[in-house]
Length: 231
Length: 204
Image (cartoon, rainbow over all chains, first blue to last red; front, top):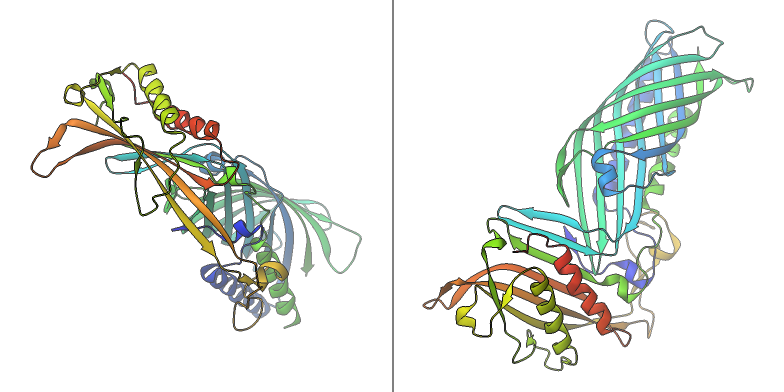
């Protein structure tokens, strides 16, 4: 969708979340409540909540569109351990944002028509992973526990490009996978609080109708966070 | 329940940050764009000659009649120079040319009335308040701007149909931007070069 001169012309740096993104927020909150409820029905099982801040590196289509790394990102994950302390299931909701300013041309086209548009651009990408996750833990409890995990679910990705007097907006839903390696590190803070460091590869499969067509928008996310665990 | 509330609040806080974006473009030259379109089925190497329709200057497109023509000669000279550099030969009789090159200009005036949205200033999320946007008509806060666009068309003369008086356009360049007192010919000419630079297929 192309819109005309936006609020940035007035010298404003803020854009409101729009209706669709608001719906994402509501859906995510609803899913979050659902996971919490599911967790409480397994009250006899151990549970873990993780809040992480993410440093992200763009790759593949994401890197072609925005080459900058990003410190804007966070995720919230709830896990529970249905059988043993080795295996957990959970749900992860995250947000990662990439942006940069560039004058590189953008190729586009359809059918027999090709084209390029150039000019100073502000490129911006928000990715919202919403994943069901599974982790397998190594090591012993009360010690640092490395784990391997896999997330499967959906990504909502929102792209917009300010160029000249126009803003080109696009968004899409992607099926996606997210393999993960992490470590849960005990702390002496009490309350079941632990540190979590994880490296995750986000791979939303190619989909959508973005400015350069169907895209994948993959990225690495290094998360550092805290967890609360109840055994 | 308390945990559910905490989790929701955390998530809401995280996602609401997504509406925060740094300021982007901040002067009129940042609004210049160069857009080129071409027919991908055409091999531009098969054309040999071009004729430039420059005798009447830039064609005025649209209702504005007070378009400045002070840069017409420079614009045509720059287009000619780029085509010659790509190996095409200029002919002065359009009937002998493979490609006819035309250029036009249009300007549009815009007036924005003074109506700002409070949430842009005071909130980082939407909507700020139940009921949505609040508009504050601040007296004297409106502004005007003029958008100027130079259009260059390349027409395949062999496709001219005398009955319909039409021909196929095989390449276009649209150079657009906000015009103000600081708009200079150098920016315009640089954008013509950019149009050719981003069209590498335009070559003998």
